[in-house]
Picture 1 (cartoon, rainbow, N blue to C red):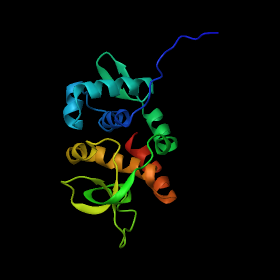
Picture 2 (picture 1 turned 180 degrees about the vertical axis):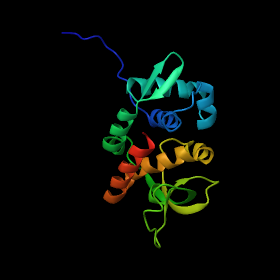
Picture 3 (picture 1 turned 60 degrees about the vertical axis):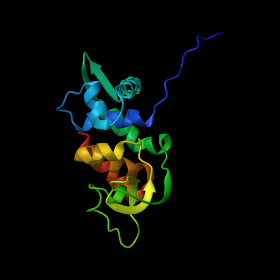
Length: 178
C-alpha cells in the first residue's frame, strides 16, 4: 500500500520559546509583530513557530487570538523537554544566571563556592558555566520580561538540573503556568 507522502512537522526550540511567552502573559493579545519585537525574532520566524506550536498543541488560535494550552505545555515540560532539547553545557562564560541560580530557584538552593550556570550573554552580570539557552535571543527577551525569565530558568532546571532541582522546578512551573 502506498501512503501519500507528507512532511512530518518537527518541533523546534523557538516554538517552545514563543509558546511560553504567550503562556506567561495570558491577559495579553499578541500580534506576530509584537512577539517578534519582544522575543528578538523575525516576524516570519514567529509565524512559523506559532504554526508548529499549534500542530504540537502548545497553542490554539481562534481568529487572531492566540492562547497557550497550559496542560499540554506542562506535560511536555515535565516529561519531554529534557529529551527534545537536551542541555548543551560549555565552558566558563559571562552571562545571565539560570537553573538554580535564576530568579525563581535561587532562594531554594545554596550556591556555595561553585560556579552558577549562565546563559552566555555579553551583557550578563555573572560568570559561570555556560548553558546554551533554548534560543539565541532568550537572554535579551528575559531582560525585558521577568516572568518569562523565571519560567525559562525553571525549564533549564528540568533540562539540566539535579533530581531535587527538577522536582521543585516541576512544582513551581505548575504554579507559573496556571
